[in-house]
Each structure stands twice: as C-alpha cells, then as structure tokens.
Image (cartoon, rainbow, N blue to C red; front, side, top):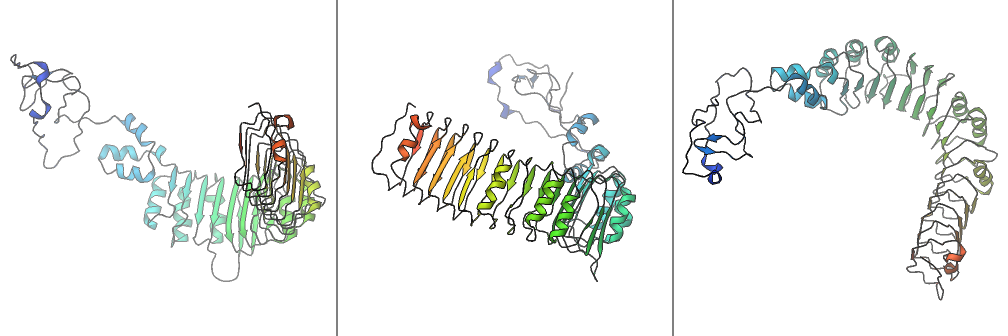
Length: 483
C-alpha cells in the first residue's frame, strides 16, 4: 500500500463527490533530504499508486498522477546511453557533474569520437587531458587556439590518438617535424587541413606532406618556400592563397584540385593540373598568371574534367580551348573574353551550368548548347545581343546588362523569365512553349513588337502572367492568349 507522511490511501469521505476536488487544497510536505547525500534524488514521472486513487479522502482526477517525492529512481544505463550519444562534448562535460552514474556514462568512448576546440577558450592542459583520456578520437579540430605549444602537440597529444582520421590546425606554430611525424603518430589519418600556419622564424622553410593514407589535404594562406607533397592516395588537394613553389608528384587518384588565389607561375599551374589524369573538379580562379596554353594542355591531360572555375583570370580568352566533357564552367569577371571565346563555349556540348557575370568586354553572345540548364550573364555592361538556343534551359539571369538591345530565347523548359532595368532593350523573341510568367519592368526602349512575341501563335502558348511596368516606349499592342 502506498503511504505518504501526511495522507493515507483508503480513507474515503462520502459526503464529497469526485468532481469537487481542488488541487490547490493539497499541500504535500517536501521530502526530507539528508545533510550529506551520496547521490541526488530523482523524482519519477510515473504514478506510484495508480491513476484515480484517493489522497486524504479525496479522489484524484486521472490526469494527475501520484508521485512519491521520497522514492529515488535512476535512469538505466542504456537509456542514458541513447540520450548522451546526441550531446556535444561540452554538454557531456556538464552532464558528468550531476552524479557518479552520469559521469561514468558520459565517459563512454563512443561519445568522444570528435573533439572540436575551434576558437574556444581552452588551456593546453585541458587539450592534453582530453586527448590522452579519449584515445579513440577520430576528428580533432584545434584551429584558432593560439599559444598552443607545438612540443606539447608533437610529443604528447597526437601520439595518443592512434585512430585519428581528420585533423584541423590553424593559426598555430607549424614545425616541419610535426608534419613528418604524422605518418608515425597517426597512421590512419585521412584528412588534414592547415589554415594560416605560423612557420618558424628565419628563412622560408619547406613543407613536407608525406603520408601513405592521406586522401584530403587543404592548405590555406601559406608562405612556405616549397611544398613537397608525396601522398599516393590523395583524392582532394586544395592550396588556396599559397605562395610556395610546390614540387607536386604524380597523383594517380586525384579528382579535385583547388589552386584559387595562388601566386604560382603559369608553368607550375600547368604541371600541377596535368599531373592528375583522373581530375574531375578544378578551381583556378584568381590565378593571374593562367594562360590559354595551359588550359589547352589541361584539356588534353584531363579528359574527365567536369567542373572548371576560371573566374577573375584576366589572361583567359579560351582561344582553341576544348572541354567536351565539361558540365559546369564559371567565367566570372574575365575581362579577356571576346568574340573568339564563343566557339569554345559552344564546343562544350555537355555543359549544364555557365556563369559569365561581369565580363565587361563581351559584345555579342550566341549559344547553342543542348544540355545547358542555367545561364547567368549579370553585369555584362557591353553586351548588346544575346541569342540562346538551349532546349533544356530552366534559368536565365541578365541583371545589370544595361547595353542589351536584342534578346532571343528558345527553350522547351523555361517557365519564368524576369528582365528588369534593361533600358536599352528593344527587341524580344521568345520560343518557349512552357513559359508561364514574364516580367519586363523598366525597359524604356521596348517596342510594340513585344506583344507579338508574347502571343500564343508566336511560341508562348502557356503564358499566364505578363508584367510590363514602366515601359515608356510601348504605344499600342494586342496580346493574343488562350490562358
């Protein structure tokens, strides 16, 4: 029988009905707590005497379960395991302060596979303690922890992490012995990322990356004299904003290469890209020394290339460059693109995405690509004529091309077209059977022929919405539509 120090179950007061019980009339006395408790008392959330029982002669409603404040109930270990596996490392540290059971469960090695100390206020002793206490860590991020002793990292922290697979360093001293010792301390390392490494004082030193299992290497903003890379399993290599002259060996498995904003010469860029015959993704944006000759060599050496970024490369003209398997091409802010560049674009028959934003010297653009889906020509100040015959195109953006006078679009999948603030636009020709929405706002020079282009008998049978706001050049027109 459930008992309470003040109320006993079993006493009935027949003069009162079941519905006249007021919860606020019952004042349960707080449980007696030992002055030096060995563990906290947990209150259960389930009824101890069943629903609808009587307390002090009054029947409790079914929605108010009876709870015994003096009955401690601990969560089973398997329940804590399911809860703790969703917590971060800082939350696990807080949970360890609750009681002995929680502390033991929070130290399970399954919860400590990732240590992320990025930009945190943590001491060297704490980093060392956590690394030595949890040798099963597979992800370690210590980027942004300044004044971290490299000897501590080299001799104590990393040697205890034999199962480490991903390591992120940044804004720290980077001695050459640390990179050389990674293959001994962390034999299973697969990913290494270095951001703003601080090299030892004195003359520029070499960076040696030698690891038999490394598959991803990212180095950002490094001023080393030379980067020696010997990782035969490497599939992803990123050397952004690097000033070194890398001695890059043959990479038989490399599929992604990023050399954006690097201060490398044209010959070094060529040697780096052509050494990877399986290359699929290449980023050479902001490489001022890049030339068309290097691109022609890359096209021959990398037949599987699918994505290419040449944004902000002033010397790129694409004269004689052919990439038949290319799917994504970005040429933003390339001032060298002129009329001779258009044949190279039309030769890329597999192209699905093309970005030509801010190409200030391009006057005319005539594209006929069977697979092109997305085209962007925003900010092309000198572009006066745009002809696009792409049956699969679904998106067209020409914002900021204020010199555009003629636009011709043929697409079987284009559903929406928005053209705003094209003050020089006069002629529009649309052959888009799936087009439903058209907006031509603030096009002052637009002529009355736009009504014929938007009519059902001229290629827009599904048109449902037309916006021609602030088009001061329109005088008279008739729009014929069945929708």
